[in-house]
Image (cartoon, rainbow, N blue to C red; front, side, top):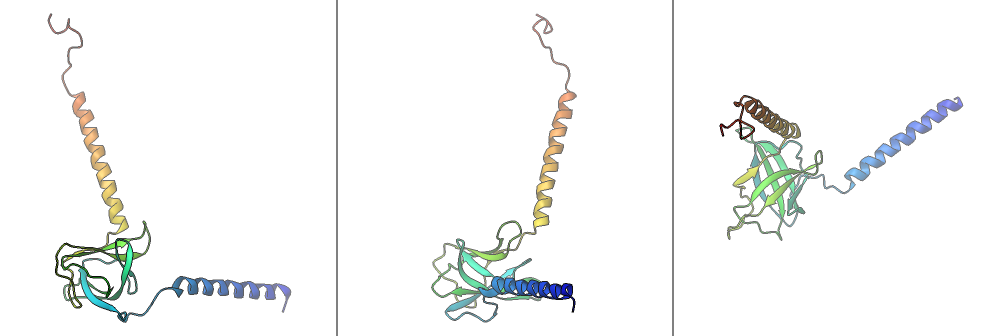
Length: 177
């Protein structure tokens, strides 16, 4: 083997080792299993969209992790059915809501629980009555652009409408005094 071949093999091997290390670090802290956690109860939330939400993602209350997404499936009406494993030490009011949130603009997804006010609590097997699915970034940007265009058109109409007003007298002499 020539010296450059040996060098290329060493660089390629080092690159592969770095990639393997990065993969191990990024998934090292996550529980990739889909089994229910011991010490948790299971509730279900049904969403129209869950884009980017996966089994193992966090369930949060006030931004604090209280469980994980256990299962993700479709029902007979093609809605996303998400099974949530909630820590047994957390009691959620029955009228709580589940919403899919994104960390930052392009971050990972999580289920954020907004607690309700009822005295009755959710128990294992219950289904959230109130849910909000994920917002697609491109849809959000389109809403912002459409709102800006509507305001721009409204301003242009106001300016054009003002130019069509009859001339107003500018001095007291023009008013017939």
